Image (cartoon, rainbow, N blue to C red; front, side, top):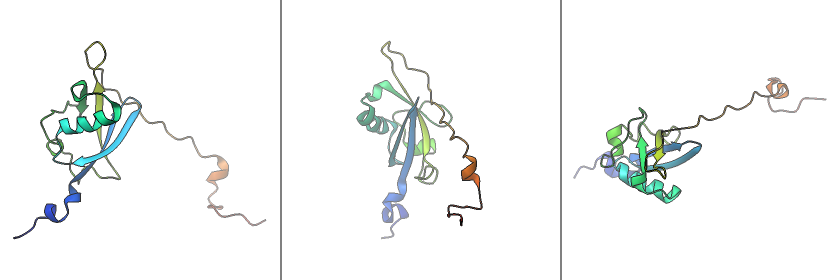
Length: 129
């Protein structure tokens, strides 16, 4: 019996995800065969919002179907690595019964380095006195 790579290396099917809503960012991993509904259940365990009150969006801001697998949206081990997770947008249903607009607050940029830290001659070593 010949074994495929997925049988020999089952961990290679892990998809790393960064789920974003407003200022919230959730890092998680799943199998590429995980359905969107299963991912919503994982999110429910973290933010306590039931799957029917969640909407997930792919990188093109298209709503993801509960019954499709992550790999159907191009989320595979080769496209969503630990060092570069795939981004998924999250919107939740408000008290009025309608879903909020998808909003992902941009990350802030770090401030410029102070001049004293820009000195390339020091390079982290102490200067002779």
